[in-house]
Length: 260
DNA sequence: ATGCCTTGTCGCACAAGA
Figure 1 (cartoon, rainbow, N blue to C red):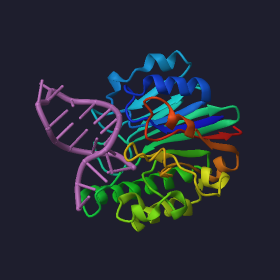
Figure 2 (cartoon, rainbow, N blue to C red):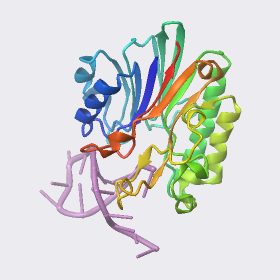
Figure 3 (tube, chains in turn yellow, green):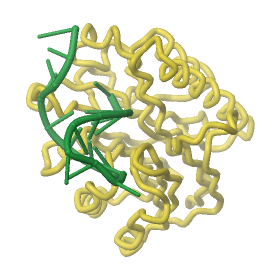
Figure 4 (tube, helix red, strand yellow):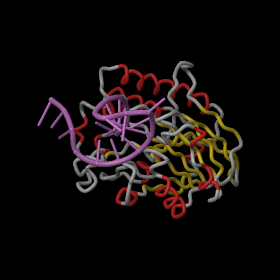
């Protein structure tokens, strides 16, 4: 089963690009972030024509996540538990049947958190704590679990072309990185880092200042695998060529193959 | 030091992103 994640920066603006990529990459499951659409306005039909069941958890203007599956969706759980007053659409879980058992996939759009020292940064850290609480519950089920999405965390210096440029940024704060490491410590495997231990592995290039042409990138889109999912990992990759397409997202797709 | 681009919005610029 091929599972992918992509922050598309607006489904309306990225519709043709997303469809082109889907027909080439052919993932069984894809998690989108930043759909920037309410559920009713998400263009489901062109994706359904490619064979996907479409599930969305959106809001007006900002944020919003989706999960598309060519194997149907058995159960769907929107919203990250832990704060009933949180209205930002950033989390969606789906149970999907593989050839050899059920897998749970979560589409995650973790808060950016900038600027540091504001309520936005404390919201990010609180959100990461809620995520840890949630996945602890799911880990106890001892089933394959994939946490796929835009984490807005640069885990290590290796994950940025110019780490020094990010020291004042929420994506690279010790607290953000520590919370990400805490996830790993629960038993999750960072699929891409496991497959590619080298430097220069990025998933985001800013639209500004020629970041793409200078390969001034960062790795912030991650696929974290529970032990039962990691045991079945056979391949992983980053579709970086999409960043050079017309009307690109500033993020590129990340994918894994699982023998399930 | 700031903007650099891009998207969405009851627009005639602005917020938010990272």
